[in-house]
Image (tube, rainbow, N blue to C red):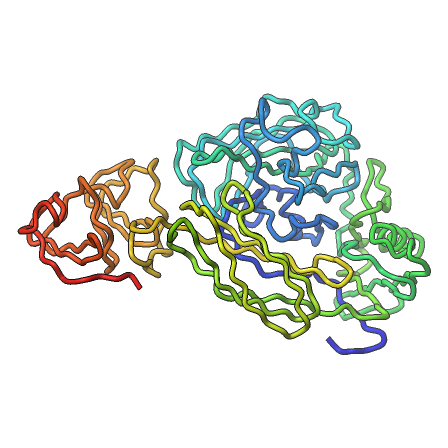
Amino acid sequence: MLKLKTTLLPVAAALFSASVMSHGYISAKDGGIAAGRAALCKYSTPTGEQNSACGQVQWEPQSVEGPEGFPEFGPEDGKIASAGLIQFSPLDEQTASRWVKQPIKSGMNDFEWTFTANHVTRNWEYYITKADWNPNLPLARSTFDLNPFCVVEGNMQKPPKTMLHSCDVPEREGYHVILAVWDVGDTAAAFYNVIDVQFDGDLPVLPEWTQGGQINPGMNLTKGDAVFTRVFDSEGERPELSTRLDIDSAKAGEANTWSYNLATKINQKNENIQAGQRDANGAFNPVFGANPIYLKSASGLTRVEVGYEIESPEPEYTVTIDGVAQEYVISDGKVALDLAVTASGDLTVEMTVYNHAQEALAYEKLSLADGTSTAVDMVLENAKAGHHMLVSRAKDAEGNLVDQQMFDFFLLEQGEQCGTDPEAVNHPAWSNATTYTGGEKVNFNGLVWEAKYWVQGASPDSSDAWKLISQMPVAWTSGKAYLAGEQVIFEGRLYQANWWVNSSPASAPEAWSDKGAFDCE
């Protein structure tokens, strides 16, 4: 970014890198009728609308996970949209104008899920707010019709990475909220996604208007800054149609306030450009939040962008974390993460390791000057095998969150294997609920295994029904039969089976050839 006294910043969402391996969300990428509230904090609608001031969920809409059992159990009333997670609490804000609404009709509609980790599934259930609900009260069980209008069985199988559910949506009018609950089968958790929809039966038909942009209150401004529109037709920019709002006080620079004031000024200036949310009479009403911008079709105008003049340009911040492996082997109940953290900009970086149950296991806080790098050794005590996450949060000198990343990794018990196979990530993870008929390859503890014949429930390292494909020995397992040529690690030595054998090298030494001492290191 150029170090200028005054800098023009084009409208664009800040993008932060993140490893997104875990979980799933309601999307609208390929056939879905509407994206969820959380997804619209990160992605925009086809017409450019996007939720704002969402907090942490803008980086991980796939992680809105809470206790299962709704409506008898699950997140408490008032915290349903966030699944009860404090880091996602902005999702629980609820007013008639707070969130982007997407059009829908009663009847058959397709709801789309995108899974970043496709867990074994019990079912999906869909609920909708009652006909007489109050959109200005927090979402509670009393808000919804607790008889789900759609239930899709998961049959304890893993879904594909994306899938559509065809559901018969009940008759409603105006603004409503749909709650989609994904009940995971291999944990005691479920994912909660609310969807803000607008039934078009009570809206005026306005073919003369099309949406051409949106005012997104994505940041606070300061006195001396300005925000303005850039209007375009098919020939290019129309500077004479621009609307400019100068910020003359700290209060006027609050994000929702300047969004409202800019929309109001647009509506006063040009009859061919209007901003705000449409009401039942066809009027455009500015709101303290995101304001869609509409263009009169006959005007020849094509789009509107929003730009800023910032007296002191915001610095660009990035954090690079190197050294996170996909798997770690537990040794003496511990695992050490040897990391290198590099900062662009003066930053405070907080790093926390969580297990799959969202329990914090390790924490580090660093203060890094621009361009510096430091080594970090995060030790996990009493480590248990399974899925874990490293979450980093970077803040500037004022405490503003400027970057967040998440890395998924797995802990393995020592002795289960010696190392991992990079090829394993190209195969689906083994599941005890999946039936394998023979020939399927799976990822089990970072190694590739192939089913020899029909098998269900038996783990690859303990069953004769599985063949190890990865060229890597594993620990000998009691009760498992080995074919001639297969190798195992036993009491620190490498052995190769001379013929079919289901006994250890100690009890049947004639069936094994001792290949010498073996060290995983």
